[in-house]
Image (cartoon, rainbow, N blue to C red; front, side, top):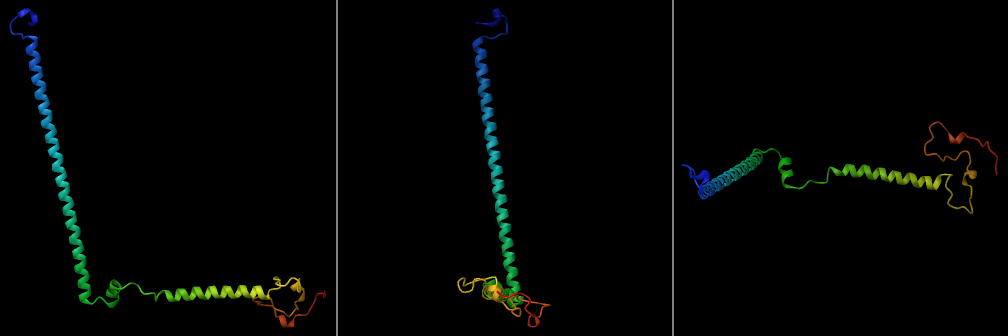
Length: 163
């Protein structure tokens, strides 16, 4: 069957379909080639990234080697026994001795002060049966404060009634 009533130069429906199918196949082939080219480009990019990573690793190794060489030079030059000793041995606890001493003195004095308050303060009553009100039995010369700056307890007189 021809288009246009058989006039010259026109093709039949079947021929147009064949040409279209061929063009589609060629288009698909071109797309596949483009995809393959893209994949190749991606592979090349990955290879470049891997090469860059390898270069970075090599640079890091070189830096580490340089640091080791510097350490060896310092040891050879005699940078001091403290530097080489600190690198080889763990830290000694000698600097902690004053700290431990001050902490123990502080804790000891706090415990002793609390014991003094518990035993000598008139506000504390350990024996309620025999001494229910210990603050009434204090004489004016008894010093129950820890530190009295301006008060002389020896010269005080009793100004209160006895119970």
